[in-house]
Image 1 (cartoon, rainbow, N blue to C red):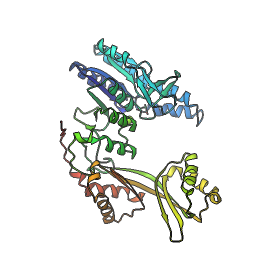
Image 2 (spheres, rainbow, N blue to C red):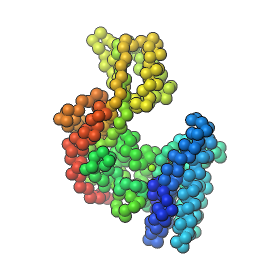
Image 3 (cartoon, protein in one colour):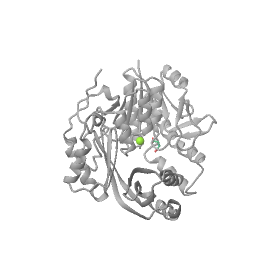
Image 4 (cartoon, helix red, strand yellow):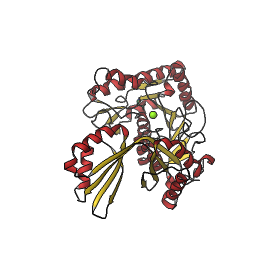
Length: 413
Ligand code: ASP
Ligand code: MG
């Protein structure tokens, strides 16, 4: 008899009807002879509603009290799901994060799970219970209630699955799996049968949004296979696992994008070793996240420096750079907003030269100017005009033949 961990997101438990549907899926797995742990998020947009309630008091509330407030969302959904399962004649019990033994670091709002004391869950499973655990929450060693960051229920599920040595961890959500790109932007996007941990980490970091990045990190560290699948349709979703367990058909596996990018450029800086730490420490101290950085040295030994940031940080960045003109010592400064970032991701790039060249060719053929570029072993990102984002996604999706992907689940032993 194996242990199966299932996680259901907010939409999947958004109404009593949906909760009853979840109860059906959970009890089906139980009837098949498995021990079942189910992790749930708060119902629908409940967490957002709690956030806006607090915002009516102050834009900046105490992080401890925010955690106290937000963790109530999951208490509603776990108890209702336990009742729905009991109503079907099964033994079910709901547990908060702390009752389930989830110990986190002592940070409010974005805590990491340190360990899970699994004795209680294991004992309840052995007594025949279906165990329902509240996602997104834990307890620090100071006995304070903590949360794992928005979307953190995925991480709860994966961490529990890893600690219990579960056979499977299924993440049920409102899409069929992980797609080659966002189907709302590119209608020919198709579901991938499998994605490697590294590809998923890149996709999650680049905004693909299907999984909490820390959940993927956890799964990777513990070699746990995750399946992302639909809570509405009973079909196989996307498996996320080791690269070498999977037959990859295409070098580029997915296209991710972000639409609110601004480029800032400082011209004529003095070429000194202190220059980069000075600028980027200043921006970091104001909480401004810098993404792509390009530096070039001119023939008269001056430095031109461009970097990209999120457009929401633009005004703040301009104010800082202007107020520190003398300290930083640049000659002129300009910026360009209304930009977007589009990235191609695929583990196969490591051993296939020419992938980036093709990307530039496809963009050029659609007359899309590339403003900035950054690469890693398994991704290439370009910054382009926001007005041409959809066109770019389409050109790349077609160019790399992602519209023709016909994947079968082929897992090697
Ligand atoms: N309910 C939390 C949120 O909305 C956690 C989660 O959904 O995973 O962020
Ligand atoms: Mg989520």
